[in-house]
Each structure stands twice: as structure tokens, then as C-alpha cells.
Length: 214
Image 1 (cartoon, rainbow, N blue to C red):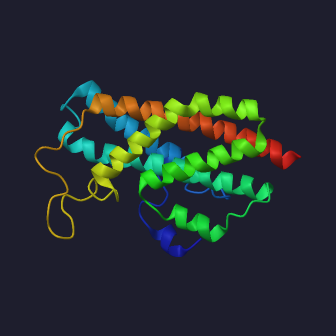
Image 2: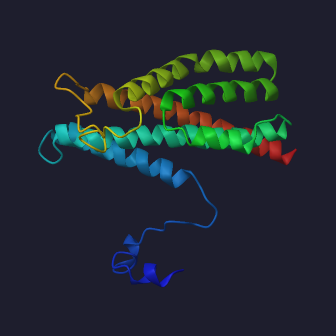
Image 3: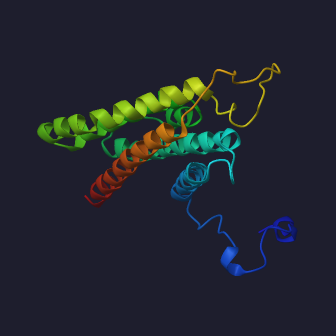
């Protein structure tokens, strides 16, 4: 541990209950994914509960969109990373270099398509044809919603810069006076996406655990 960190005023000190642990040793996606989702949801519910009394809707919308968006990006990348391990177990070729290219992409729509393709590929290799077809049918609506959300967010803010800066590198606004977003409808879609991604990740973890134990 460097002395620089030790000397940083906000690094550690005060009531130990409020010292956040940044690393538990092995790298994990969970804390980042949960952190971005819960922060986004807190902002959203605060705006919906209190209107403009605490977080003005026209201000809070920017961090809310960014945090939800990054939650989806991290969730998709985390599951792609896990499916990369699964594909290696099947002896399929999917190089680490190719995976790195996927992980460095910040556009959601291509990630979503890659996620769907990899998910179906894993199911096809690990499940019976009957169960595989059932899984495809059961996830059809959820994948359709996820894909639409990713497309919409890419159209709204492809590189996630519009929610971080008011202007682009040409000194023009990212948005116009005609751009609108309904907080209630947006949050409802995000909660449905959250349910699907959490369920998919739970199933993926169980599948990987079973495969590694063989």
C-alpha cells in the first residue's frame, strides 16, 4: 500500500463503519454492478417520491441515466466474461483478444447482440433440445425488451458522454429542446431489465458451477 494513499485525507479515518472496502482481494463484478444499479435506483425513486424538492428532475435525470446505463453495460460484460469461461470448457475457440474487443466496446446494442448469441450458444451446448427451445421461448420477451432498451440508450447517448457533459467536442449540445424522457416509464423498463439480467446471471453461475465440478 502506497504512502500516497495513506496520506490522502479521505482515504480512511473517522467512524470505521463508514470506511468502504474498495477491494476484497480477487476482482469481482458484483460490487460495481450493484453499486451502479442501487445508486441509479435511489436517484430515480427520490425524484419520483419528492418531485423537485430534493433532486430536481431536470438535473437528476443525467446521473440517473448514466448509472442505469453503466449498470447494463457492466452486467452484459460480466456475463460475457463468464460465458467465455464456459466456452473454453466446451473446447470452443473464443480468444481472450476477441473478448477484450467486446469488453472495450461502450455501445450497448452490439453488447446485447453478443450476449444473446453467447447465451443461446451456451444453452445449446449444455441443455437438451427440448429445454433449450423452452428457454429460448421463455426469454424471448425479456430479450426483446433488453434489446430495445439498449438501442434506445445508444440512440439517446451512444458513448455515455451526453449524460456526463452538456456539450460535445464541437461545442454543441448533446440534446435539443425537443428531447424528453418519462422517468416513470424509464424506471419501469430498467426494473424489468434488472429482473431478467439477475435471473440470467443466477442461472449462468449455477451452470458454470456444475460444469467446473464435472
